[in-house]
Each structure stands twice: as C-alpha cells, then as structure tokens.
Image (cartoon, rainbow, N blue to C red):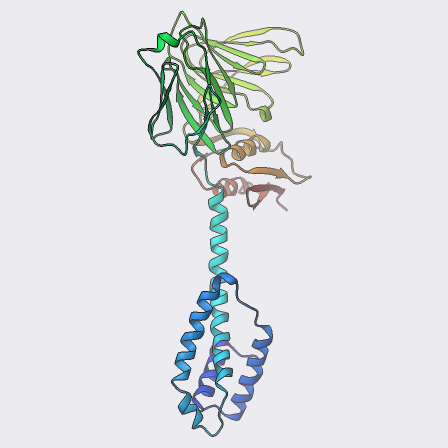
Length: 391
C-alpha cells in the first residue's frame, strides 16, 4: 500500500478500521499516514476553537455509538486513535475552509477600509466648540448671533438669517467648516451663496455679512462657488497669495498645496483674480471669462482655456484625467480615498494619463484602469498604496 494517499482514501481507511473490516496492509497504511498527519498538525486559530469543539463532539458521539461493535472485533482498535484521526481530517478540511474565508474577509476588510469619500465635515463655532456633522442628526443644530444653522440629510449646512439678526449684525464672528481626506460638504452661507467643499478643504466665513463692505471668506483646498448677486457688496475669496473678487458668478478654486499652483476656473459671469506675491513684489491682476482658468504660481498669473467639465469632475462624482501626471492623479485619489501614496525610486511620477472614472468606484477598479496601460502597478497595504513600475 502506498504511504501517500488522498483524503478520500484516508477517510475510507479510517472507516474500515473503525468498522473492523480493514486488512493488515490497510491498517499499516492507516497508521503510517495517521502518524504523519499527527506530526504535521498544528493548533487551530483561537477564533475557530468553537467549531473545533463542535466537530470533536459530533465525531465522538458518532463513534461512541459503535464502541460495542468495535470491542467484538478480533483486533480491537483504540477509539482515541480513530477519534483523533477523524478530528484531524475534519480539522484539515475546516482549516482550509476557514483559511479561505478568513483570507476573503481580510481582503474585504481591506477594501472596505478604502472606501470612496462621503459627506463628512467638522464645524468649528465662533466660541471654539467643534461639531462633527457626521455624528449629529438632521434638522436645526443651533442658533448663534441671529443665525440658525441647519443640517440637511443630503450633506448641506444651511445658515439662515433670523428676524433678530440686525441686533447682533455688528458683532462679526466666524465659523469654520473643514472636510477631512475622504470627505466633502456643501455650505449655504447667510447671503444664499452656495459652496461645495472638496476633500481636505476648509472654508472660514462670517456669520453675517450685514456690517461688512465685502462678503469675504477664506478658502484652503478646493471649492466650487455659486455666488448670490449683490452689486453693493462684492464677494471675495481669499487664498494664500490670491484674492478672487466677484459680484455674482459661478467658479471653482483649487488651492491644494501639493498641486504647486492656485487654479481659478470660471463657469459663468466674470471674476477678477489678484496676486500679491511677496517673492516678486509685483501685484498682478487679471479678469477671466467663462471657460478660462487663471493659474497662479510664484512667477505670476497665467490664463489658459480649460475644459470646464474636467475641472468640475469632482463635484459631479467623477475623475476626469486629461493628460494629467501620475503624481497629480494619485494626489486626487489619495485625498478622495484617504490613502497615503508612496513611490518606488525608479517610478516616473511625470507619466501622463487620460480617462474618466466614477469617484464612487472601489479603489481597486481605479488602480486597475491605470495598471491597464502597462506602465505601472500598485500594491495596497492597509491605507497605503505603493506605486511601482510594471516589470
């Protein structure tokens, strides 16, 4: 009899030995394989001990019912050996099964940990209190300085002026809304202006514009504005090194530091972009038209024509890449999926790609599409993505 046999053959040997019908040769083969299994068997994972005990109890009850018959055989086989053998067989089967399940669950957990972004933001009130907008219910949150703040179910923070607002209009106080990596939010300001904040961004604004000549807000990161018209009170967005002045219009500002420039793109109306960079000591000012983008760098302001749909992809739930570098693309992916991106030394981060994908997709689908070019490949480990050359 061969000493390397299949699981089904070993089970058949165990059955024969249990029933007392095994030949001497089969008994010898069983003993050899059993001893080998016993040497290789390792303890179960602690999470599976419950299943192990259940299996042992089931086998024990099955075999104990036949103990009287076994005792009548010419050769009495020790019950513990066949009990243990059966346990080993089922343990092996369960170990493989649960290892596969565990691996699948770990893979699913890893994927679940890298979900697309969602409505998520922190509101910091004028008195310093912080409100996690993910943890509070919908409806009216609070009142401050004659303003009622309401949270809607679809990710909006609405500031509404109350009748007694004029009493506190001269007391200028500010709120701050911050979105984390993997978050976005919409804010409706007291004047009715709508602001969509992209991931890893913040907007600081006064509770009331009533006592101010200009409706001035401060932005970090990226946001899209639909400004309510008011000819007597210009709306101004302040970034580091830039001011955007409008009367009533639709525009997008991207001021992420890792982008290397501040980009203001106009969709409707007109805006004035002013730069006062201390490094060049020159005040630059340009007026842009719909479909144009003002790009502010340390060298000044450059105006280019731009595909508005591509600029607004994030607000519309997409990634649209138009000859964008690998670094730019992975910056966007990292912010939206809240992952850190690292590059192997020989990776060319300047490689350019074009394409369109939904921001609601699993991150693996995004990376798979990029890998399909044959240029690069990705390795996911927890919340970190390593970019490697495809070799």
